[in-house]
Each structure stands twice: as C-alpha cells, then as structure tokens.
Image (cartoon, rainbow, N blue to C red; front, side, top):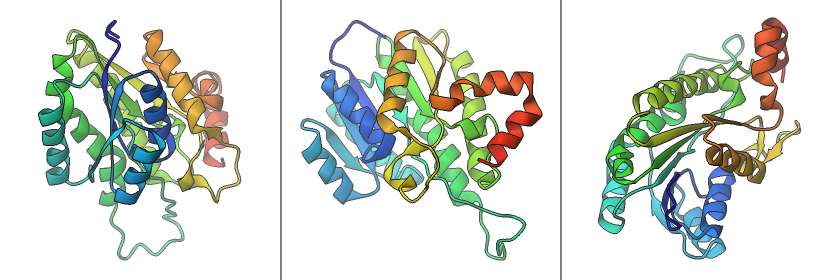
Length: 245
C-alpha cells in the first residue's frame, strides 16, 4: 500500500455485516469510505453510525445500477485506492429433495460470482490511477471445499477463488494487489438464526488488514486457517468435515 494517509475505499455490500465492519475500520483510519447496498434505510443508518461515510444505493447485479454507482464515484473522487467486493448471500439448495420445477441458478451465481467480477472490471480504471491499489474479494472457506447444503454458493465462491488467483497474476505488474478473504461462517444479520460456531465480522476485518499489511494474497480467518493444510494431507477427511458442517 502507498504511504498516503487518506485513501478512497469503495465497499460493495457495505451496509451491514462484514462490509459494515470494513467501513468502520477504514473510517477509523481516516480514509474516505463509500459504501453501496440495496437497502436505502440500512445505508442511512450506516451514515448515522459512522460519521463521514458516503453511501450510494446500488444493486451490483444490475449493470445500469452499477454504472450509476461508478459515475457517482468518478464525479466525486479522483481515484479509488481500495475496492472491497463483499456483496453476497448464502441460500440453501437441496437438489435431491427440493422442488426444482421453477429453479433458476442465475440469481445466486450473479450475486455471488458474476457481480463481483463486474465490479472489479468497472472500477479497474479508477484503481489504476492510484499509486498502489488493492482489490479485496470476500470469498469463503466453502470456495475451497464445498458445503453439502449450499452447492450453488460453494460453486460461486470457488469461482471467486480462481478469479482472485488469475486476477492477481494479470495485475502483478499494474501496481494493484489482490487479496482474497476466506472466512468460515460469520456472525452477521444474515446468519442470526444459525446456531453453528461463528466468527465475528470484526475478526474477519482484522485478519484481512493484517494480510494486506504483510502483502499476503489470502486472509484465512478462524478455522479456515487450517483448511488448506488438512485438504493437502487428508483431502477426503477435509471434504467430509466441510460437507457436514
């Protein structure tokens, strides 16, 4: 990262959960944070909760909405230093038992994979203006080994994992770092009804900032720190553990 103190940080899915935790952390560092989300009321609350945060209502799965957000950034800010692509949602799908007569995978794939790629493509010109830019892609441990109850989410996050690797390779000479965030289940409003062990959104941000500071390509959080090693040593055991998680 550059030595400049005031950076411009754009966060998608920034009104709650991990996105809001990123907004708090970067705002506390004195950076200008611009958060987007679909829920205007949540965005208004974010502006109240975190003084100085700029917000914009945007559905990143809709190209016209994304382009409007990009135009807003272009008009107000000279460049983007950090882009955090965080928008996503986990929906359970059971191909063995669910009624799939009206099934359409596109909405989940668009939100969890396609929109993230489109966000990166849209903001790359802004990031290239920065002395040293950083793209942060929020993935999941399920992108390394799939969850049995979430095949679409797992597939999309596996796509993010591969995209992050390829993007890092392509941008290695462009002065733009690519950091993939790989958390386990995170304690957010979206997971409030789930009783499994969770990590806090703040811990995800803390580990990510450490990884960025050290120039690491990935921020492995909580139990996902051990997942690559277990997958390498006993891959079938690792898969069984994650399948049933």
